[in-house]
Amino acid sequence: RTAAPLSCSSKHSTKEKHLVLLRDGRTLIGFLRSIDQFANLVFHQTVERIHVGKKFGDIPRGIFIVRGENVVLLGEIDMDKPCDTVLQQVSIEEILEEQRLQQQAKQETEKAKVTALKDRGLSIPKADNLDEY
Amino acid sequence: MLFYSFFKSLVGKDVVVELKNDLSPGDTRSAHATGLWENVFSYLEDVDKGIQEHSESYLSICGTLHSVDQYLNIKLTDISVTDPEKYPHMLSVKNCFIRGSVVRYVQLPADEVDTQLLQDAARKEALQQKQ
Image (cartoon, rainbow over all chains, first blue to last red; front, top):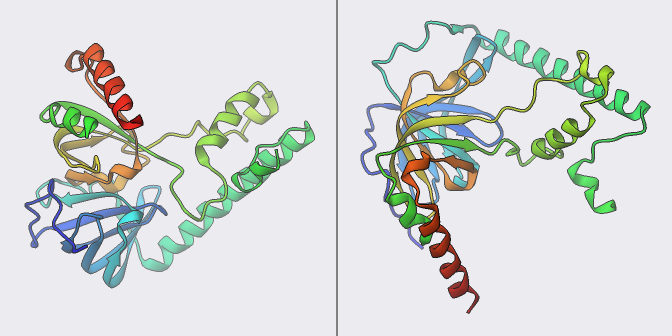
């Protein structure tokens, strides 16, 4: 089966940057070089953008080939639209640190929740042990 | 093929696409199922105080339906995100392509849908598929 261009996305300009949201929550921004019917993508001069609160940081990633099944959404970045008015760009180290703190806070609330429920003899079934019921 | 034709008839109308939230392949817990259980347990006041986060909000995108394909991939123009605070990356994106496999709901304007016709067509399609 040869890769054919998607019927509903014909006019992709190679001069405009594209943004792709992946299933694992990552955001990639770069020049879209090719796309096929599975939404497999080739990105050029890719940058991974991490958002924490109002801050964001860009990590340069080079050339990316994304398998279509991991794509949630693909958008064209409009250069004319004023975008970074509320968002503040920070260095890579800072945004990674912010992200780590955010993950940590999330895990702590999760843990507290599980403990609170366990004290009442209740538990939220996880997908990996659903078969035991 | 039925819904492909159905969506094609809605091109140019405003729709809201709600995406699936529990998407990460590495996640052992389904976020949607968790949300349901939390609703059941929400009468627990201690859990409410500070431990319970706000209910899972899914990324919803409002826009004009530009095109659709056989996989029900959707292309929207003039998009706006229903919760821009939570999803800031979409601020400068006007048009987008959404992979059909990640769509949970497509909210349609009620007056654009002839539910009786759609129901009959769906029943016929189901019967044909059975044979």
